[in-house]
Length: 207
Image (cartoon, rainbow, N blue to C red; front, side, top):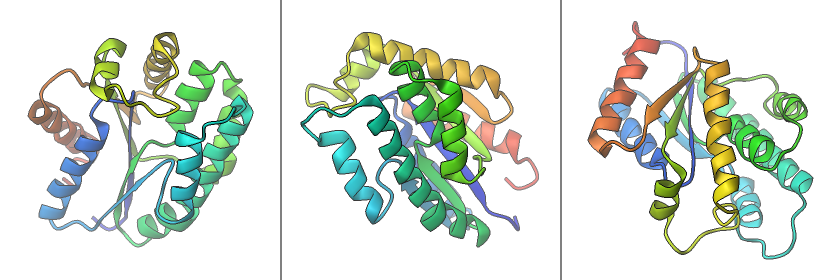
């Protein structure tokens, strides 16, 4: 495989996306690929400081401010981590990206989705993931998996997270070529196999 790839992992808190990202990284490395892991918010360096504010700030954060903080972190992640790695032929796996902002701030918070899409385009300079996995699970189960100690976003309430789930499924419906929805209620092993299956279907010549 000559060119790099940018693959993102999306879904509700507690859906298991981070576990699946790490499993895929291990698999790809075993196949001889050079893999870079990152996340949003909280890519290495400046992003870690933005993440601390977004998830743990105990004061009032306006919805628009929240969105711009995510977008600032995204621009840093794309410019400093994602683009250099992909251009060098590496496979970048990212825990959350643009679809999270649409799902959480758009569908969840009720902000203007068309405006969010425009701002996402600016933050990423037009780069889109080559493949996105959305790990879908019912809201009650995802909240149980998160546990009692929740960060600011996880504590937003059941109705909010139901809207987020609907948002992810709607985004996937609009972009079926890029976004693959995976049933996250299955076992870790079954989900991992489905991730590999979808990866092979998408990049049949490479994997």
